[in-house]
Structure formats: structure tokens, C-alpha cells
Image (cartoon, rainbow, N blue to C red; front, side):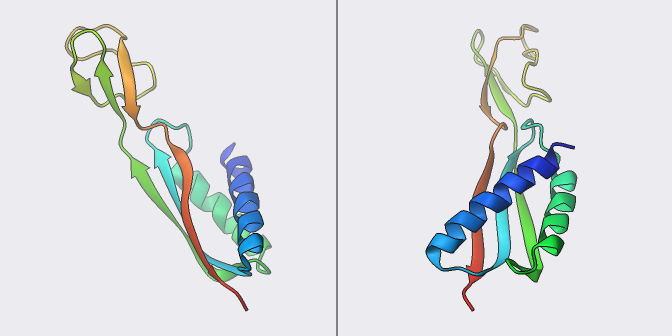
Length: 118
């Protein structure tokens, strides 16, 4: 489950930035996760809960993770058809050729976090 490693990196980035900003308790983390980003939202939630519970010096006990899902969209470079791929390489529904350019759906990033200083 690579989501544990991903969440570890997220926690580290947030902790570094929050410390620089004088924030001592994190209450909310928001992520954008693309449908075809290879990160599973449920596994990310589980990993967040583990990190939160192991780091109560940094997270409030009821800190929450909010995940915004980015819909996958692609456009065929041959015929211009826009469609919703289920994976990174997908056939165009019109010309049946794997010639799609991904427009969205791969994003995996921290959108924001909220916290307070004691």
C-alpha cells in the first residue's frame, strides 16, 4: 500500500510548512486526488488516521482529511473527441485508437491545511 508512503510525505511537508508558519496543531488537510492518479482515497484516509493517531503532538485528535476527486478527462488528438478515460492509456470511443491526451485526472496534491497555534 503505497498510500502510507504518500501520506508520510504529505505529513512531513505539512509539518515543515506549519512549523515555519508558527502553526502547532493541524485540524484539517485537503487533498486533490485524480481518478487515475494511482492513489486510492480509502487507503489515504486509513493512512491519515494512522499518522494522526501516532502524532497527536502535531494533529488535533479530531483532525480530518478531506479529499476532492478530480475527474479524468482526455481528448483524442486525431478526432478531437473528449471522453472520460478509466486509465492513463485508453482508446478513443470514436476512432478506437489510443491517441488521447490527458486533460485532467492525474493530480495528486495538497490543496490546503488548517491549524492553530497554542
